[in-house]
Image (cartoon, rainbow, N blue to C red; front, top):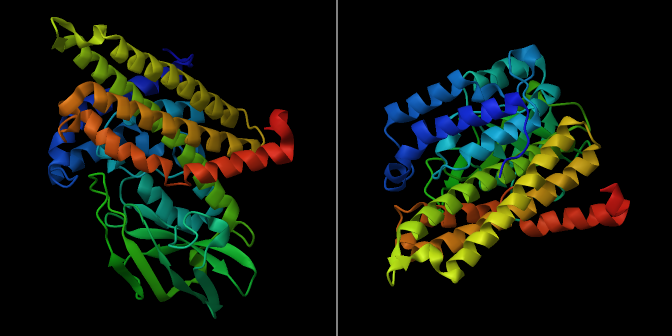
Length: 386
């Protein structure tokens, strides 16, 4: 099942696979049994190696010292990272290209480039209890007061906030009939973490709820020009949805490999479990679905690299997010069934992925939101126009 890739993409794919296999995968069970956390020296080693390999610079423009890799190359990297459970691949920050379009040079120097160098870590304060990830219905506000903005609102599921030192905060500007992103440092007066729920997966990165009450930030912390706020948030969603597809493909591939190896070695009635037709059907369905998902994901990445219409790209990323995340969940379910009782043990990769992959159908827009985006694109532009 080889996707035709250029030489550079194949090299990055191999580099990411070696990193995932050698630096991350051996520590999965340790992380699972310790609240998602590894010994600090192991986490520091993994982060440093990722930076040395260039993973924190893959989407950074060359004009700012980055590698400016194609989207196809980035998908090849994150597909391999997706083979690892417990979000161990999140040990490094990864600035996205839109940040260099949105941010001022001062903001780039203070926030974005330090992320590439491993000196800062961000988190996204976008989702809210009511509208969820529907950014058009966000209730948080930013009101100008002299040379500051005053931010108010409650943000849910602020992923990695316990490890981050600044927020990207999305808010409405009621006095300007606009929306915008703001850079907000952790520890700014008025920011309060009001909950840190436990979730099904076991990650070192938590998803707390924050209340912003009369948080004052200078005008220089506003990102972009008037009217730009939503476009950059949409750019973030496109990138994240495509990379969820990439990671889900990697997870599904590992699940198929592990389930096949187990079924081939497990003896039932004097013959390998893999000779049972019921097992073969589950494996066959999984392979067919993964092949379709990989083709879909890499085609969307290639469309980005060709510079196709941004509205078409938005729909493509929703198609990837919808199909691939649901595919990976089906494969995880089958893998647990093939492993039987072993598949219900936390030390088993199928059990961990069974829990971890479920959220990919929810965050960065639920499957239902992706269906709405796809349907609206169809109704507006027709099938050929998508």
